[in-house]
Image 1 (cartoon, rainbow, N blue to C red):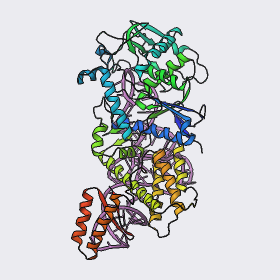
Image 2 (image 1 turned 60 degrees about the horizontal axis):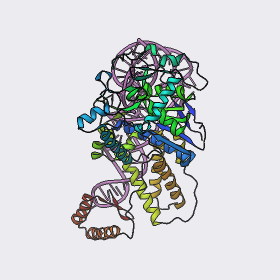
Image 3 (image 1 turned 90 degrees about the horizontal axis):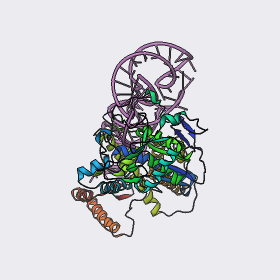
Image 4 (image 1 turned 180 degrees about the horizontal axis):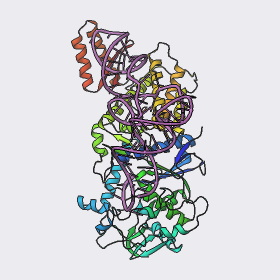
Length: 489
RNA sequence: GGUGCCGUGGCCGAGUGGCUAGGCAAAGGUCUGCAAAACCUUCUACAACGGUUCAAAUCCGUUCGGCACCUCCA
């Protein structure tokens, strides 16, 4: 078994070789907390959650540290807009302070992530807690001649950095996104900033106008940190100057990740990241779903209609590097698919609860090896889910059959728990079974008994009424050749 | 202008030379008082046109259509 990861730096799948297998270090860019999360974000966070969970499985949970930042500093929405940033603009709209906005939306995001069973990061630093360190890094870059001060702001000197000879393992500016500065169109969406020496230079520190709410004192006067700097600083603080994996959305590859690389290498004089992973977009009607597009579907609204884990399942049915076409029909299909999985697992668990393990060991089911192989191939969750559906089909046949192999059922349960719950995070095993000896179970036995009596005297009006009324409160009755079973919907 | 990506059956979506992915939906069947669930069967597709090859959804070329990024964005 060897894990292969598609590395944006090389544009190929590479065998994953940790810098230190006893502690794999992974970072992902976190949210700027000024709006609710939408399904496009969900794809990105769920994808990296599965990467993380798979590494925890492969190397042991204690051998991985996963860091995600919270960007609670507003950044410029538009240079022409006189310092109006996303956080401050939202604060004005909601008539609250930017700090309240950040706290409110951070809580919202974490709630949404929790509901989709995304594990909390090991460390979740806030940009505002690292202002001092960001200033220090800007100073370091000034000392090294890679930045300059202009009108109270500090900018990274991209052309200057490009002229330096980089040691082995360092990535030149443009090396991640494969861009050359001279080919770029400047001043398209954003007006050119006259303070900069060159349009590709980016801010390390921005001078704040007096009315700007979030500002801190610095050697260059009152201001606030540049957008890219926090990730470099917080990643180094928790993960060191060189670490294994950096993940994020494809739309952050340029400029954000490119700038991170340049400033980290420039300031700390070490290679930055071994493997860069980029998650693709969700599309609606053939267009990217995004904040600026105004076509975003936020999670709070989706949760009113759909199970958060069905949304997770929907996302895992496509590869993280592919775009995913969103439609209500596709979501419904995913919900049905997840339902099929849940039913099978509940059935399996009920069988295993009623018949205790007899200690018979059984070898690992074949589908698990196929599952792990798919995951090893750059986290191919669609193929991996296909292997699990094969396993579910085998399971259902076993459950139908008269002579059940208990050892094999236990082996299947262990394999499904690992694959579905530990690695994919679909949480199939934690549902209440409504076991024996509980009052609900006893009551259900009475109801089923009464219905059975009605059926025996062919009073189907009564028996169907019982079934329909139970269904209305979420209890489904299914008649099988072994008698009637019930399950909570 | 530059840099990438994509076009697969009704829908979603894997697959990069030969071995019908998978899910959802639909139809038929087994079971059944009826349902439901489960199982079995059916629906065998790769934008178009050329080329390479014993063999192309996959490689090459052309065309058509679409998407993303180029300093706010997951």
